[in-house]
Amino acid sequence: MNRQDTGVDVATGAELAELFPIPVLTYQWPDSARLNADLQKVILEKMERSPGVVKTNRGGWQSNTDLQTWAEPAVRALLQRIQLMMRELVRRTVSSVQDTHLRQWDVLGWANVNQKGHFNRAHHHIGARSQWSGIYYVQVGDLRPNASVTGRTVFEDRSLVPKEILNNPDPFERQVTVMPKNGLMVIFPASLYHSVEAYSGEGVRITIAFNLWNPAFTVPFYPGMESRSWMWTNFRGLMLIPTKAPEKVRALASLPRYLFARRPPASLRPVEWRHYIRTAVDHAFANASEKPPMKPTSRP
Image (cartoon, rainbow, N blue to C red):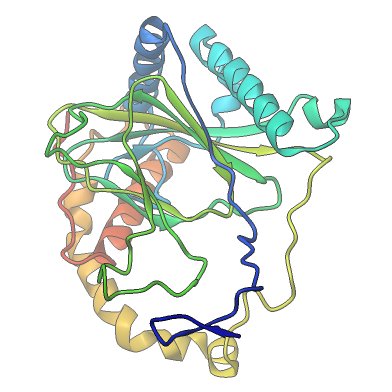
């Protein structure tokens, strides 16, 4: 140890290692206006025919995770772009690239449509068939750099590395905010937590999200990563009663609003009515968990 003029002991031989960097690949696809217009048309037509699903979206519309099966030429062109981007990421992150690394990646995709007040809560995409995830911005609506409109994508720092707060007291200083642009594609590890700010614009905000999987890769999962306390594991229902009971009451009270927020199915087929009612129930219970609960979008 050496002592400098400041009187502070300094370990001059110490080495600092920055461990486990998180790779995030971004690319602004050129000449995307026509493709984006075609994708927007396809997605809005799908939205008219389906009530969608509720996952991390609070408000808004999310398609089923079957975009990879859509036959429209614009969707097929986007899927080709996703493959090209994934191969570029492999070349930049794998030291000895083999053909298997570059093979056709399995894609699981879905479309998202947000309007004013809609957002996505923080989440990850970890799953049996999701190693990498991505976002493609089809139509960012009123979002512009240096504008007051919100609706950006936020990548969260959940590394739990201590952060100093004397120079900057903001504990979330290290999170990364992505300004969406039409034609921008972002690929990142499926484990990276991210969210979408509540969209405050008037125009529609449309994105496509996707997960990727390749048998030449794996995700290390250590025992205990999802460990819970003994009480939580064995008496989860009792542990949740104090916080969840008021939620359920709010959800049931708001259910009629969500049932009438969207045009009911024109068909009498039970499967369409079950989907319509299930989506309304999902919206009611999902939004009741947020404070304050959000109002549904008016019927088109």
